[in-house]
Length: 307
Length: 141
Image 1 (spheres, rainbow over the protein chains, first blue to last red):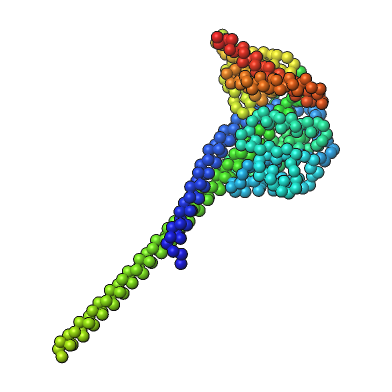
Image 2: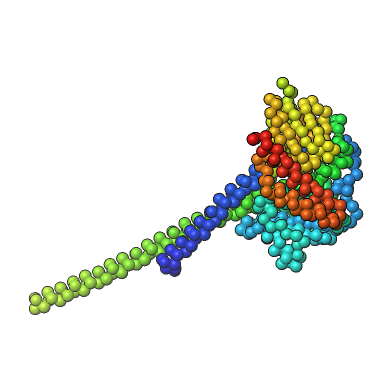
Protein backbone atom coordinates (compact mmCIF):
# COMPACT_ATOMS: atom_id res chain seq x y z
CA UNK A 1 0.00 0.00 0.00
CA UNK A 2 1.62 3.31 -1.13
CA UNK A 3 1.75 6.11 1.37
CA UNK A 4 -0.20 9.30 1.07
CA UNK A 5 2.76 11.45 0.15
CA UNK A 6 3.70 9.03 -2.68
CA UNK A 7 0.26 9.37 -4.21
CA UNK A 8 0.24 13.12 -3.75
CA UNK A 9 3.54 13.34 -5.60
CA UNK A 10 2.23 11.11 -8.40
CA UNK A 11 -0.86 13.30 -8.87
CA UNK A 12 1.26 16.40 -9.05
CA UNK A 13 3.52 14.99 -11.76
CA UNK A 14 0.57 13.77 -13.85
CA UNK A 15 -0.96 17.23 -13.59
CA UNK A 16 2.23 18.77 -14.91
CA UNK A 17 2.32 16.37 -17.86
CA UNK A 18 -1.29 17.15 -18.57
CA UNK A 19 -0.50 20.84 -18.75
CA UNK A 20 2.15 20.17 -21.39
CA UNK A 21 0.00 17.86 -23.52
CA UNK A 22 -2.90 20.29 -23.34
CA UNK A 23 -0.70 23.20 -24.44
CA UNK A 24 0.65 21.13 -27.32
CA UNK A 25 -2.88 20.26 -28.35
CA UNK A 26 -3.83 23.93 -28.57
CA UNK A 27 -0.68 24.84 -30.50
CA UNK A 28 -1.23 22.01 -33.02
CA UNK A 29 -4.83 23.07 -33.49
CA UNK A 30 -3.75 26.63 -34.33
CA UNK A 31 -1.06 25.43 -36.72
CA UNK A 32 -3.45 23.08 -38.41
CA UNK A 33 -5.93 25.88 -39.01
CA UNK A 34 -3.21 27.99 -40.59
CA UNK A 35 -2.17 25.13 -42.86
CA UNK A 36 -5.78 24.47 -43.83
CA UNK A 37 -6.15 28.02 -45.12
CA UNK A 38 -3.03 27.38 -47.20
CA UNK A 39 -4.55 24.23 -48.69
CA UNK A 40 -7.65 26.15 -49.75
CA UNK A 41 -5.63 28.82 -51.53
CA UNK A 42 -3.30 26.33 -53.18
CA UNK A 43 -6.14 24.17 -54.47
CA UNK A 44 -7.54 26.87 -56.78
CA UNK A 45 -4.16 27.47 -58.39
CA UNK A 46 -3.34 23.82 -58.78
CA UNK A 47 -6.58 22.78 -60.45
CA UNK A 48 -6.55 25.71 -62.84
CA UNK A 49 -3.09 24.71 -64.03
CA UNK A 50 -4.19 21.10 -64.30
CA UNK A 51 -7.32 22.03 -66.27
CA UNK A 52 -5.29 24.03 -68.75
CA UNK A 53 -2.91 21.14 -69.36
CA UNK A 54 -5.89 18.81 -69.80
CA UNK A 55 -7.34 21.31 -72.28
CA UNK A 56 -4.13 21.47 -74.25
CA UNK A 57 -4.00 17.71 -74.44
CA UNK A 58 -7.61 17.58 -75.59
CA UNK A 59 -6.93 20.13 -78.32
CA UNK A 60 -3.70 18.85 -79.68
CA UNK A 61 -4.26 15.13 -79.25
CA UNK A 62 -1.42 13.14 -77.78
CA UNK A 63 1.15 15.88 -77.47
CA UNK A 64 4.58 14.39 -77.17
CA UNK A 65 6.35 15.79 -74.16
CA UNK A 66 9.18 14.27 -72.11
CA UNK A 67 7.43 15.32 -68.89
CA UNK A 68 4.28 13.48 -69.86
CA UNK A 69 5.64 10.45 -71.67
CA UNK A 70 8.16 8.56 -69.64
CA UNK A 71 11.45 7.03 -70.70
CA UNK A 72 12.68 3.48 -70.55
CA UNK A 73 15.11 3.95 -67.65
CA UNK A 74 14.48 2.74 -64.10
CA UNK A 75 16.43 5.26 -62.06
CA UNK A 76 14.13 6.82 -59.51
CA UNK A 77 14.32 9.75 -57.13
CA UNK A 78 12.27 9.90 -53.95
CA UNK A 79 11.20 12.86 -51.89
CA UNK A 80 10.06 11.88 -48.41
CA UNK A 81 8.11 14.43 -46.41
CA UNK A 82 7.84 13.84 -42.65
CA UNK A 83 7.80 15.98 -39.53
CA UNK A 84 10.45 17.91 -37.64
CA UNK A 85 9.65 16.15 -34.37
CA UNK A 86 7.78 13.25 -32.89
CA UNK A 87 4.84 13.14 -30.51
CA UNK A 88 2.45 13.03 -33.42
CA UNK A 89 0.98 9.55 -33.26
CA UNK A 90 1.73 7.42 -36.28
CA UNK A 91 2.28 10.36 -38.67
CA UNK A 92 6.04 9.98 -39.24
CA UNK A 93 6.05 6.21 -39.06
CA UNK A 94 3.31 5.80 -41.68
CA UNK A 95 4.87 8.17 -44.20
CA UNK A 96 8.34 6.64 -43.87
CA UNK A 97 6.99 3.09 -44.06
CA UNK A 98 5.16 3.90 -47.29
CA UNK A 99 8.31 5.51 -48.73
CA UNK A 100 10.36 2.44 -47.91
CA UNK A 101 7.82 0.14 -49.51
CA UNK A 102 7.90 2.20 -52.70
CA UNK A 103 11.68 2.46 -52.71
CA UNK A 104 12.19 -1.25 -52.15
CA UNK A 105 11.28 -2.23 -55.70
CA UNK A 106 13.17 0.57 -57.42
CA UNK A 107 16.65 1.59 -58.28
CA UNK A 108 17.07 4.70 -56.14
CA UNK A 109 19.35 7.27 -57.72
CA UNK A 110 18.50 10.21 -55.48
CA UNK A 111 16.86 10.70 -52.10
CA UNK A 112 15.55 13.97 -50.74
CA UNK A 113 14.14 14.38 -47.27
CA UNK A 114 11.94 17.10 -45.86
CA UNK A 115 11.84 17.21 -42.07
CA UNK A 116 14.36 16.06 -39.47
CA UNK A 117 12.55 12.81 -38.63
CA UNK A 118 12.81 11.53 -42.20
CA UNK A 119 16.44 12.66 -42.48
CA UNK A 120 17.50 10.88 -39.28
CA UNK A 121 15.59 7.77 -40.17
CA UNK A 122 17.40 7.30 -43.47
CA UNK A 123 20.76 8.29 -42.00
CA UNK A 124 20.35 5.63 -39.33
CA UNK A 125 19.55 3.13 -42.05
CA UNK A 126 22.84 4.09 -43.73
CA UNK A 127 21.20 5.99 -46.55
CA UNK A 128 22.50 9.54 -46.65
CA UNK A 129 19.96 11.85 -48.34
CA UNK A 130 21.30 13.82 -51.31
CA UNK A 131 19.67 16.94 -49.96
CA UNK A 132 17.73 17.70 -46.83
CA UNK A 133 15.11 20.37 -46.56
CA UNK A 134 14.58 21.17 -42.95
CA UNK A 135 11.61 23.19 -41.79
CA UNK A 136 10.37 23.49 -45.36
CA UNK A 137 7.00 22.01 -44.49
CA UNK A 138 6.61 24.20 -41.41
CA UNK A 139 6.73 27.43 -43.31
CA UNK A 140 6.61 26.59 -47.00
CA UNK A 141 7.95 29.38 -49.15
CA UNK A 142 7.41 29.52 -52.84
CA UNK A 143 11.00 30.56 -53.48
CA UNK A 144 12.20 27.33 -51.94
CA UNK A 145 9.64 25.19 -53.69
CA UNK A 146 10.81 26.76 -56.94
CA UNK A 147 14.48 26.10 -56.18
CA UNK A 148 13.66 22.53 -55.21
CA UNK A 149 11.61 22.00 -58.38
CA UNK A 150 14.50 23.37 -60.47
CA UNK A 151 16.90 20.81 -58.96
CA UNK A 152 14.43 18.04 -59.71
CA UNK A 153 13.62 19.00 -63.29
CA UNK A 154 17.37 19.43 -63.99
CA UNK A 155 18.01 15.88 -62.81
CA UNK A 156 15.22 14.63 -65.01
CA UNK A 157 16.31 16.67 -68.04
CA UNK A 158 19.90 15.52 -67.62
CA UNK A 159 18.88 11.86 -67.58
CA UNK A 160 20.12 11.36 -64.00
CA UNK A 161 16.69 10.11 -63.02
CA UNK A 162 13.85 8.61 -65.03
CA UNK A 163 11.07 9.00 -62.53
CA UNK A 164 10.37 11.18 -59.56
CA UNK A 165 8.19 10.24 -56.61
CA UNK A 166 7.05 12.23 -53.66
CA UNK A 167 5.76 10.62 -50.47
CA UNK A 168 3.73 12.97 -48.30
CA UNK A 169 0.63 12.78 -46.17
CA UNK A 170 -2.46 13.98 -47.93
CA UNK A 171 -5.00 15.84 -45.87
CA UNK A 172 -8.60 14.96 -46.72
CA UNK A 173 -10.24 16.17 -43.53
CA UNK A 174 -9.49 16.44 -39.84
CA UNK A 175 -10.42 12.79 -39.39
CA UNK A 176 -8.91 11.46 -42.58
CA UNK A 177 -5.38 11.83 -43.86
CA UNK A 178 -3.18 9.19 -45.34
CA UNK A 179 0.33 8.95 -46.76
CA UNK A 180 0.57 8.91 -50.52
CA UNK A 181 3.27 7.90 -52.95
CA UNK A 182 2.78 10.18 -55.92
CA UNK A 183 4.66 10.11 -59.19
CA UNK A 184 5.52 13.67 -60.18
CA UNK A 185 7.61 12.92 -63.25
CA UNK A 186 6.62 11.83 -65.77
CA UNK A 187 3.30 13.39 -64.85
CA UNK A 188 0.27 11.17 -64.79
CA UNK A 189 -2.51 13.66 -65.24
CA UNK A 190 -5.26 11.26 -64.24
CA UNK A 191 -3.50 10.71 -60.91
CA UNK A 192 -4.37 14.15 -59.71
CA UNK A 193 -8.11 13.59 -59.77
CA UNK A 194 -8.17 12.17 -56.26
CA UNK A 195 -7.47 15.64 -54.97
CA UNK A 196 -10.48 17.21 -56.59
CA UNK A 197 -12.79 18.32 -53.84
CA UNK A 198 -16.32 16.97 -54.06
CA UNK A 199 -18.56 18.92 -56.41
CA UNK A 200 -15.71 20.42 -58.42
CA UNK A 201 -15.98 18.35 -61.55
CA UNK A 202 -13.74 18.40 -64.56
CA UNK A 203 -14.90 21.42 -66.51
CA UNK A 204 -16.06 21.22 -70.10
CA UNK A 205 -13.37 21.70 -72.69
CA UNK A 206 -13.57 25.05 -74.43
CA UNK A 207 -13.38 24.82 -78.19
CA UNK A 208 -11.22 27.04 -80.37
CA UNK A 209 -8.63 28.25 -77.94
CA UNK A 210 -5.74 30.29 -79.22
CA UNK A 211 -2.44 29.10 -77.81
CA UNK A 212 0.11 31.85 -77.91
CA UNK A 213 2.77 31.27 -79.22
CA UNK A 214 2.06 27.50 -79.60
CA UNK A 215 0.53 24.66 -77.58
CA UNK A 216 3.93 23.07 -77.17
CA UNK A 217 5.53 26.28 -75.86
CA UNK A 218 2.70 26.82 -73.42
CA UNK A 219 3.02 23.23 -72.24
CA UNK A 220 6.77 23.68 -71.78
CA UNK A 221 6.18 26.62 -69.50
CA UNK A 222 3.21 25.13 -67.72
CA UNK A 223 4.38 21.71 -66.57
CA UNK A 224 7.29 22.95 -64.42
CA UNK A 225 4.79 25.29 -62.78
CA UNK A 226 2.45 22.45 -62.04
CA UNK A 227 5.35 20.72 -60.32
CA UNK A 228 6.17 23.81 -58.24
CA UNK A 229 2.50 24.13 -57.35
CA UNK A 230 2.29 20.47 -56.39
CA UNK A 231 5.46 20.58 -54.29
CA UNK A 232 4.18 23.59 -52.43
CA UNK A 233 0.79 21.95 -51.98
CA UNK A 234 2.35 18.72 -50.70
CA UNK A 235 4.22 20.67 -48.01
CA UNK A 236 1.04 22.40 -46.88
CA UNK A 237 -0.85 19.10 -46.83
CA UNK A 238 1.89 17.33 -44.90
CA UNK A 239 2.06 20.08 -42.31
CA UNK A 240 -1.71 20.11 -41.85
CA UNK A 241 -1.73 16.32 -41.43
CA UNK A 242 1.19 16.38 -39.00
CA UNK A 243 -0.49 18.89 -36.75
CA UNK A 244 -3.80 17.15 -37.02
CA UNK A 245 -2.34 13.82 -35.87
CA UNK A 246 -0.42 15.61 -33.12
CA UNK A 247 -3.58 17.35 -32.00
CA UNK A 248 -5.43 14.01 -31.77
CA UNK A 249 -2.52 12.35 -29.98
CA UNK A 250 -2.30 15.16 -27.46
CA UNK A 251 -6.05 15.15 -26.97
CA UNK A 252 -5.86 11.46 -26.07
CA UNK A 253 -2.90 12.06 -23.79
CA UNK A 254 -4.74 14.86 -21.99
CA UNK A 255 -7.79 12.64 -21.58
CA UNK A 256 -5.71 9.77 -20.16
CA UNK A 257 -4.06 12.20 -17.77
CA UNK A 258 -7.47 13.33 -16.59
CA UNK A 259 -8.55 9.72 -16.03
CA UNK A 260 -5.35 8.97 -14.19
CA UNK A 261 -5.71 12.02 -11.95
CA UNK A 262 -9.26 10.96 -11.12
CA UNK A 263 -8.19 7.41 -10.26
CA UNK A 264 -5.26 8.60 -8.18
CA UNK A 265 -7.42 11.08 -6.31
CA UNK A 266 -9.88 8.30 -5.41
CA UNK A 267 -7.04 6.15 -4.23
CA UNK A 268 -5.56 9.03 -2.24
CA UNK A 269 -8.89 9.63 -0.54
CA UNK A 270 -9.37 5.99 0.36
CA UNK A 271 -5.84 5.74 1.76
CA UNK A 272 -6.42 8.92 3.72
CA UNK A 273 -9.75 7.58 5.02
CA UNK A 274 -8.12 4.32 5.99
CA UNK A 275 -5.42 6.04 7.97
CA UNK A 276 -8.00 8.18 9.77
CA UNK A 277 -10.04 5.07 10.60
CA UNK A 278 -6.96 3.34 11.90
CA UNK A 279 -6.06 6.30 14.02
CA UNK A 280 -9.58 6.51 15.42
CA UNK A 281 -9.57 2.80 16.17
CA UNK A 282 -6.30 3.27 18.00
CA UNK A 283 -7.63 6.18 20.03
CA UNK A 284 -10.88 4.42 20.88
CA UNK A 285 -9.01 1.24 21.75
CA UNK A 286 -6.67 3.15 24.02
CA UNK A 287 -9.55 5.05 25.60
CA UNK A 288 -11.48 1.83 26.23
CA UNK A 289 -8.43 0.22 27.74
CA UNK A 290 -7.90 3.25 30.01
CA UNK A 291 -11.56 3.22 31.04
CA UNK A 292 -11.41 -0.49 31.78
CA UNK A 293 -8.26 0.00 33.84
CA UNK A 294 -9.87 2.84 35.78
CA UNK A 295 -13.03 0.78 36.41
CA UNK A 296 -10.95 -2.16 37.63
CA UNK A 297 -9.09 0.15 40.00
CA UNK A 298 -12.36 1.52 41.35
CA UNK A 299 -13.63 -2.02 41.92
CA UNK A 300 -10.48 -2.95 43.83
CA UNK A 301 -10.76 0.21 45.92
CA UNK A 302 -14.42 -0.51 46.71
CA UNK A 303 -13.53 -4.05 47.80
CA UNK A 304 -10.83 -2.77 50.13
CA UNK A 305 -13.26 -0.27 51.62
CA UNK A 306 -15.83 -2.94 52.34
CA UNK A 307 -13.36 -5.25 53.96
CA UNK B 1 -18.35 53.11 -69.77
CA UNK B 2 -16.00 50.28 -70.55
CA UNK B 3 -17.37 46.77 -70.53
CA UNK B 4 -15.94 44.66 -67.74
CA UNK B 5 -15.11 41.00 -67.26
CA UNK B 6 -14.37 38.83 -64.28
CA UNK B 7 -10.67 38.70 -63.44
CA UNK B 8 -9.00 36.29 -61.07
CA UNK B 9 -5.31 36.40 -60.25
CA UNK B 10 -4.08 33.38 -58.29
CA UNK B 11 -0.76 32.24 -56.88
CA UNK B 12 -0.09 29.00 -55.00
CA UNK B 13 0.07 31.05 -51.82
CA UNK B 14 -3.00 33.26 -52.13
CA UNK B 15 -5.80 34.77 -54.13
CA UNK B 16 -4.22 37.99 -55.35
CA UNK B 17 -7.15 39.57 -57.11
CA UNK B 18 -10.76 38.57 -57.64
CA UNK B 19 -13.18 41.04 -59.12
CA UNK B 20 -14.30 42.96 -62.18
CA UNK B 21 -11.85 44.64 -64.49
CA UNK B 22 -12.06 46.51 -67.77
CA UNK B 23 -8.54 45.70 -68.89
CA UNK B 24 -5.68 43.49 -67.86
CA UNK B 25 -2.14 43.60 -69.22
CA UNK B 26 0.62 41.01 -68.73
CA UNK B 27 3.95 39.99 -70.23
CA UNK B 28 3.78 36.65 -72.02
CA UNK B 29 6.65 34.65 -73.45
CA UNK B 30 5.54 35.94 -76.87
CA UNK B 31 5.46 39.58 -75.77
CA UNK B 32 3.24 41.84 -73.73
CA UNK B 33 -0.50 41.63 -74.29
CA UNK B 34 -3.58 43.45 -73.12
CA UNK B 35 -7.00 41.87 -72.73
CA UNK B 36 -10.34 43.67 -72.92
CA UNK B 37 -13.81 42.22 -72.47
CA UNK B 38 -15.01 39.75 -75.16
CA UNK B 39 -11.51 38.63 -76.07
CA UNK B 40 -11.36 35.31 -77.90
CA UNK B 41 -10.48 32.28 -75.71
CA UNK B 42 -6.74 32.13 -75.39
CA UNK B 43 -3.99 30.58 -73.30
CA UNK B 44 -0.46 31.85 -73.05
CA UNK B 45 2.50 31.38 -70.74
CA UNK B 46 3.74 34.36 -68.77
CA UNK B 47 7.23 35.68 -68.46
CA UNK B 48 8.27 37.88 -65.56
CA UNK B 49 6.67 41.28 -65.97
CA UNK B 50 4.15 43.92 -65.04
CA UNK B 51 0.53 43.15 -64.33
CA UNK B 52 -1.77 46.07 -65.07
CA UNK B 53 -5.37 45.99 -63.95
CA UNK B 54 -7.72 48.76 -65.01
CA UNK B 55 -11.06 49.04 -63.27
CA UNK B 56 -14.29 50.20 -64.84
CA UNK B 57 -13.81 53.78 -63.66
CA UNK B 58 -10.46 53.95 -65.44
CA UNK B 59 -8.24 53.73 -62.34
CA UNK B 60 -5.27 51.46 -63.03
CA UNK B 61 -3.00 49.57 -60.67
CA UNK B 62 0.24 47.86 -61.51
CA UNK B 63 1.83 44.89 -59.79
CA UNK B 64 4.71 42.50 -60.23
CA UNK B 65 4.05 39.08 -61.72
CA UNK B 66 6.46 36.19 -62.16
CA UNK B 67 6.23 33.15 -64.43
CA UNK B 68 2.80 31.70 -64.91
CA UNK B 69 0.06 31.70 -67.47
CA UNK B 70 -3.02 33.59 -68.54
CA UNK B 71 -6.22 31.94 -69.59
CA UNK B 72 -8.97 33.86 -71.33
CA UNK B 73 -12.31 32.11 -71.31
CA UNK B 74 -15.91 33.07 -71.93
CA UNK B 75 -16.57 33.12 -68.18
CA UNK B 76 -13.62 35.31 -67.30
CA UNK B 77 -9.89 35.83 -67.37
CA UNK B 78 -7.60 33.86 -65.11
CA UNK B 79 -4.01 34.86 -64.44
CA UNK B 80 -2.01 32.27 -62.53
CA UNK B 81 1.53 32.99 -61.55
CA UNK B 82 4.01 31.84 -58.97
CA UNK B 83 4.31 35.19 -57.28
CA UNK B 84 2.34 38.41 -57.50
CA UNK B 85 3.05 41.53 -55.49
CA UNK B 86 1.62 45.01 -55.22
CA UNK B 87 4.31 47.70 -55.23
CA UNK B 88 3.92 48.26 -51.49
CA UNK B 89 4.58 44.56 -50.85
CA UNK B 90 7.83 44.48 -52.78
CA UNK B 91 10.90 44.25 -50.61
CA UNK B 92 13.31 46.53 -52.47
CA UNK B 93 16.34 45.54 -50.43
CA UNK B 94 15.80 41.86 -51.14
CA UNK B 95 15.25 42.55 -54.82
CA UNK B 96 18.49 44.53 -54.97
CA UNK B 97 20.40 41.72 -53.28
CA UNK B 98 18.89 39.20 -55.69
CA UNK B 99 19.90 41.45 -58.56
CA UNK B 100 23.54 41.58 -57.44
CA UNK B 101 23.58 37.85 -56.87
CA UNK B 102 22.18 37.12 -60.31
CA UNK B 103 24.57 39.56 -61.99
CA UNK B 104 27.51 37.97 -60.25
CA UNK B 105 26.47 34.51 -61.38
CA UNK B 106 25.84 35.65 -64.92
CA UNK B 107 29.30 37.19 -65.09
CA UNK B 108 30.88 33.79 -64.57
CA UNK B 109 30.92 31.37 -67.50
CA UNK B 110 27.75 29.30 -67.18
CA UNK B 111 28.03 25.52 -66.84
CA UNK B 112 25.04 24.91 -69.05
CA UNK B 113 22.17 26.61 -70.79
CA UNK B 114 19.62 25.70 -68.08
CA UNK B 115 21.61 27.39 -65.34
CA UNK B 116 22.16 30.43 -67.52
CA UNK B 117 18.47 30.66 -68.26
CA UNK B 118 17.55 30.39 -64.60
CA UNK B 119 19.97 33.12 -63.59
CA UNK B 120 18.65 35.33 -66.34
CA UNK B 121 15.08 34.84 -65.09
CA UNK B 122 16.23 35.59 -61.53
CA UNK B 123 17.80 38.83 -62.76
CA UNK B 124 14.62 39.71 -64.64
CA UNK B 125 12.58 39.12 -61.51
CA UNK B 126 14.77 41.42 -59.46
CA UNK B 127 14.88 44.16 -62.12
CA UNK B 128 11.14 44.08 -62.72
CA UNK B 129 10.38 44.19 -59.00
CA UNK B 130 12.58 47.25 -58.60
CA UNK B 131 11.12 48.92 -61.67
CA UNK B 132 7.54 48.49 -60.42
CA UNK B 133 8.50 49.70 -57.00
CA UNK B 134 10.17 52.85 -58.29
CA UNK B 135 7.35 53.59 -60.75
CA UNK B 136 4.78 53.46 -57.97
CA UNK B 137 6.76 55.79 -55.73
CA UNK B 138 6.81 58.40 -58.51
CA UNK B 139 3.06 58.08 -58.98
CA UNK B 140 2.23 58.57 -55.36
CA UNK B 141 4.37 61.67 -54.97
